[in-house]
Image 1 (cartoon, rainbow, N blue to C red):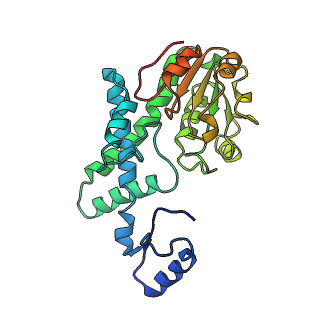
Image 2 (spheres, one colour; image 1 turned 60 degrees about the horizontal axis):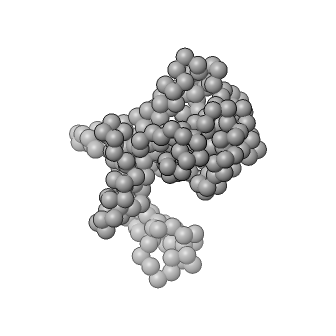
Image 3 (cartoon, rainbow, N blue to C red; image 1 turned 90 degrees about the horizontal axis):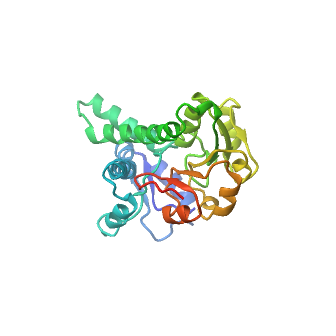
Length: 273
């Protein structure tokens, strides 16, 4: 109902008319409804994924050199030629669109003898982002995995949906479970769908703070609005140890530290409370 744009891939005028009809009342007097050939349409949805993977690669370098990716993001986003959207590093992208579109672009390139090196790198960096974050949690508890319980906030691939298709959050939780960790998870909408995919290995909680009780750390994997302003004192008092792994960089590390919590984000210096 409030799309930035709607791109329809079709060669048929009748199809164009049918597709235009339901959008008339929402995009009246604008050019947000675009009709192009199917092949052209398939190539229009990959730049946003490229921006995400670029920032995840920059975040990795920031961690190695001691820079703060949040300040880098602000610097990049302040350039009007670039803009601030889709420059947030994290555990990678998922869903039904970006992964499919990137893989389709790579396949089309291969079919026509074009390497598509950038598209391949976008996909490889995306896969590496979620693996790296999950491994970071595991390394913190190396040798104690089977004695560790994690409170996970978020299972959907992004906020405001119950969609778990190719969700980085679900992938990370699967890794935690495979390593013998116990997971208590909460998601406002995606819990049942994720539970089915995870074969019941995760304890679903009724609210975010219930998941904290008896857990050794909080792991934030989806950027739901309700996770953005948490009760830090409650987090510290409910966890068995004061550790937060922020896979979406939702929190100010200094505020987390001042609350007496250890903080581990993406592309940012770790802090200890």
